Image 1 (tube, rainbow, N blue to C red):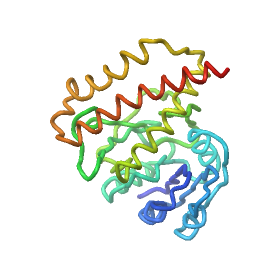
Image 2 (cartoon, helix red, strand yellow; image 1 turned 90 degrees about the vertical axis):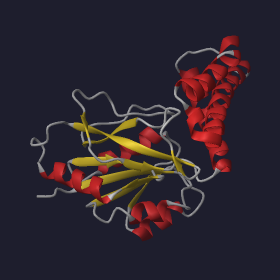
Image 3 (tube, rainbow, N blue to C red; image 1 turned 180 degrees about the horizontal axis):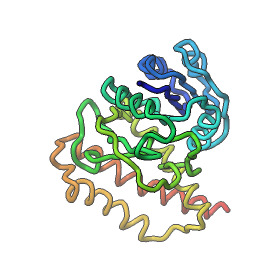
Image 4 (cartoon, rainbow, N blue to C red; image 1 turned 30 degrees about the vertical axis):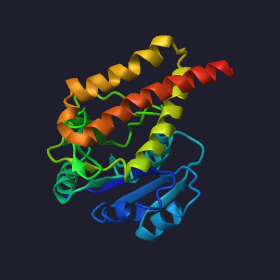
Length: 252
């Protein structure tokens, strides 16, 4: 018998896509949007679409997720982003696993493969073709609080879901560049908080290595012009992150 699931979504100025995101979750028993203080109509649109909105301003994405998980009424939780979509087959798989009960499922958490789309194309190379994230879990779990690349706390014996999650992280190239700058800022802050200091090699070697690794070793070159743009910006994002770390040190 299918079981109830709570879907939690962290948001910040996602008015362009939150209606579609919440709207495709009508199969879920509960949708919680943890809004980080949006200056647009994200919260209002999410409520109109059927979600319960929690105001969680001024914290990390991980903290937004955790606030919503703490309010979940169901034992099983799926952590979704506003730029991700759960297809009908994955939804059926999730509700089937939730229907097994608290102790009936084989694992306490499950990873899902993300089908990553970049500028209208499903990417199979450049590190985007085999992307897994632990997103389906029991509500006693929490995310590790980092500004960038937050992940669920370690869970032994994580299972894998059969069906993928659709992910379109950038609406267009300008959106990619804006997010790149924001994530470089957050990444530099995480490095600073961990005691890391910028080195000359971080600025001169790391960006080129990132481009070489994604474009040559991970075969981003097979993705045509999209691969060149994606890998080039990946290298630039590394440069920007360490340049910002150096700048933070200089003004400390």
